[in-house]
Amino acid sequence: MIPVLYTQHTSITLGKYRIAACPRALPSGRFAAQVSVASGKGSASTARIMCFIDDFATHDDAAKYALAQGLDWVNEAKPTH
Image (cartoon, rainbow, N blue to C red; front, side):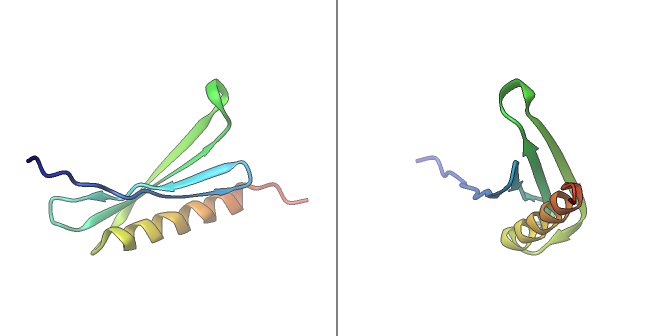
């Protein structure tokens, strides 16, 4: 039997934005935080991928950090009325 590694990607939707944490394992055994902030549909969709310098001891810690950074970016990008 071939072992399979499943990774859990955490995502949320905030208005027109979909924010998805995509932590990745580093050779050191720690995790890098990455987040995707996407909007639109089909050929009109856009996504911004942000990778961060800090590394984290666990997958969950990296995912939480990435989501927080994505939420901050969306909140700054939203027009204020």
